[in-house]
Image 1 (spheres, rainbow, N blue to C red):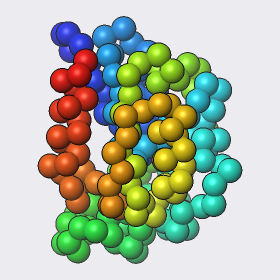
Image 2: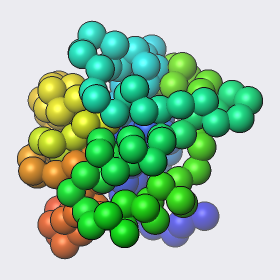
Image 3: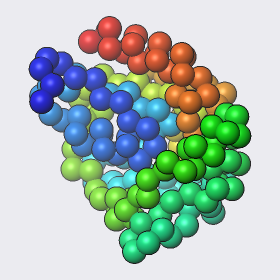
Length: 172
């Protein structure tokens, strides 16, 4: 419904979403923030299966039928470990459960092959291994920014993330 060009921004599993949705003709670029970037025929789970699990993976627990969510300990210690504890508790309380099936959905055509892309690597990420983020950014030939942050640099370093995203948008 957006008129004009679109820059999609995805975080975490949302990277898989923009990887496929980015094929829409109005989308002119993609920004990945500590995000999944599967290739053609890969799922989010396939994308990082060859890497050691991040410490936060053990804190992703079943939440109802077919869903998962992070535990309070997982949020505090492995998801937002670089934000104040009162903010971490808000993140825990407001997280939405994620459907397990989302991790297995395959990408048909990865838009990052044909669209400009940018990637923020969260060097202290304990939810997605920083190595898979760095390797993905390199594979995608993304303009890359490495931040010393947890999985959520948009919370711990919002001005830096906003500036990076604004620069991406202005280059389109």
